[in-house]
Image 1 (cartoon, rainbow, N blue to C red):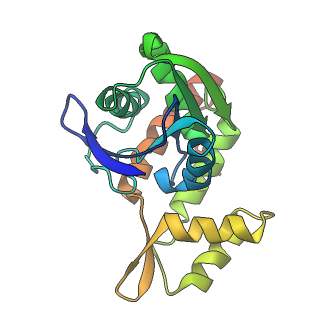
Image 2: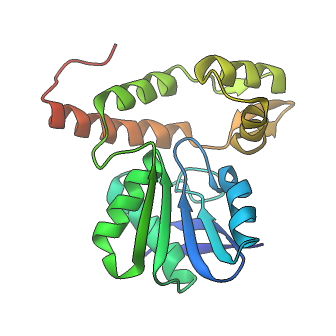
Amino acid sequence: MSTGMATTQEGTEVFYKDWGMGQPVVFSHGWPLNADAWDDQLFFMASNGFRAVAHDRRGHGRSSQPWDGNDMDHYADDLAAVIEELDLHDVVLVGHSMGGLHAINLAARYPGRVRALVIVDASPEPLPVGAERAQRLLTGRPERFQDRAEARAYLERTSPGYPDAVYENRLAFAFREENGGLVWRSDPAALGRIMSVAMSTTRAASGASAEPS
């Protein structure tokens, strides 16, 4: 596996992982994740004749954390910068949750680069119930955890029902150690701006005006 940085036209640096040879498959993560969330998929695809690529969206992981540009078009530009940096063609885009929306946006804006879309847990327009749940998780998210046990307890409480391996994987890529504790590897300010844009979009689409509970 190789890693690198692509640069958008506005100067945002976007971290990526590139693994294998063959048909390119590019993975786009949801919030508040990063490219590491796809490591198992990257290994599997690279081991079976594909070129597997994943990136850290701006404000997440190792990419730049600009104050502005937290909207669908800028996130599509992040993906496009990686695809252009690696000179990929006929790309299969795999997007999860918010990353699925960004994959759809990129395919609409750069159709000549995209061969197919695989969208997981997302729709062309964000559904109000999903956006409101994400907003509640964001505003109630602790900034810091004393240790892995406390962080895992939070993950299990807010996203129940997954196997142990899922929680251990999330602990490995979603947090980093800082002063003896764990903090998120995604910028909370960026997440707030992301959700502000998403909630405005879903309210406009549904005609709702009340704040989520």
